[in-house]
Length: 251
Image (cartoon, rainbow, N blue to C red):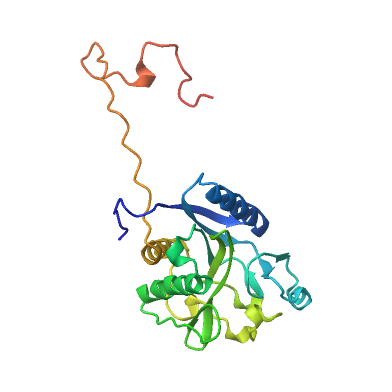
């Protein structure tokens, strides 16, 4: 499923569970600086946010305030969008090699990741001419907004899985009619947990960007021969000759 080619660059994966947007944004900034300094490898953050609206460069904040949610103005391109429970968000912190230093190509690559994830569920995802993101039919299921700093990427994509679509209604997500938004749960029967989509996103980020997961840790060094008690059986730590520990139900 995942390539073990040792010649491929390594991608670390950070699964944060449910985190506030502000905390995750600060983490992205920290990781971008570390990636620029060569202190870490490429990294993929996977997270589910508390309800929030984010606004890209040059978007109209006033139009998004109708949502009645916390608003964060951020560095990515694009307009206002919603993040919240039931949505899987992926933030790739990647140092793009010279032959991939094209923002349009990078966004198409992120769309390709989502299209391949949908394909695993026998759902046909597609691009919409002149727009960014992934559609199922005439409905948008994934939003994409990116930023780069000296060709290290941040921000990323949001895939609506079980998302409450009513949260998009008070404003125009990505400048579109809110009725255009959809979620995977309206197209296929899904498990309640998001881990399936985290695994699929990791799989296809690795494939599309030519990366691999880190090598597994080495097994612990073999212990020496076990100490034998007078009955010939190995001595268990709690039965050794050291100071007596707490008895059953102890502290």
